[in-house]
Image 1 (cartoon, rainbow, N blue to C red):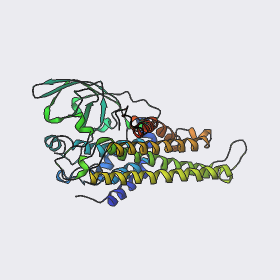
Image 2 (image 1 turned 45 degrees about the vertical axis):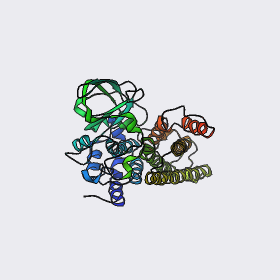
Image 3 (image 1 turned 60 degrees about the vertical axis):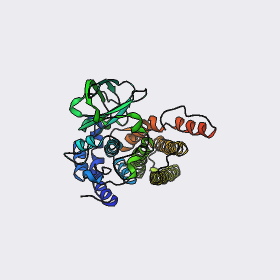
Image 4 (image 1 turned 90 degrees about the vertical axis):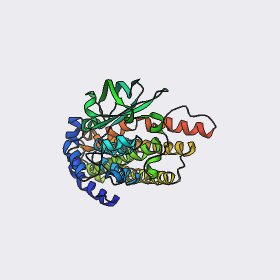
Length: 380
């Protein structure tokens, strides 16, 4: 049974206290808490973008962004994996109808990580391909049932849908930030993948026709990804803002015995942090709204794609600067492992280094284009 965006978000919001309470344990386990994944499945959030013909809700990217934003206000790692699970079901619709029916045969969603890698070796064989190699940063692999493995770059660049039991997971995810994503490496060794479970990488990244009538399923990958992940950044900043305010309400300095809630500097920082948090929320909502308009028009030109990338990079950069300013004023004890603020600080600084929204690349690509130069980076 399908649901509305509002109904789905009401269900998600009901889970947030439990997700926040599990955030520290999830970080220690280096993967999302299994109870959280079960609860998200039970409220039927995973099929948010799955076409209705397969039992999904077929909601829009605004719902995708809002879900990631809400979950990330409690735990950014869990929000990241949740957004990926929702978004990667959309990516599956780029593949053949046969593989879509196969993945959605038992339930109306898959738990599907993907990470393009230049190191995948592809060999064409009768009936399909053999693939070997290591794919890094496979967020969501710890609860996955399918995996999309993609070779990036080169004339043979291609994406492959494979069952989780066909791959090896190498437990290498030991990170100071976003550590609860469980983004371990995926290894394949001469794995046969039938032709119908493959797709030229260009068709995954670019706007392509779809077997589904909804224009949502025809848009290019990178503009979609901005809507998939930027809610995680904004939700993380909102979580940091709440944690910082809570800390300032209670904290008394060790040496001066000062109540921080009475200090002018704290008042100013809270005001600035609130302004930045509100600003990125507005920028995100406009980014999503404009992207929805482009989906309806089918008009993802180079101009619009570089503009969206610039805006996504800008949002990420504001989030990083805002959380760093909060942390710089929060005092030494705020770095304790059981303080949520330090987790948001580490997670946001880790996530803003992501190649898809790199602030330097985003600005440079836009500037080059405005001056009539060709893009010098593949991610746009």
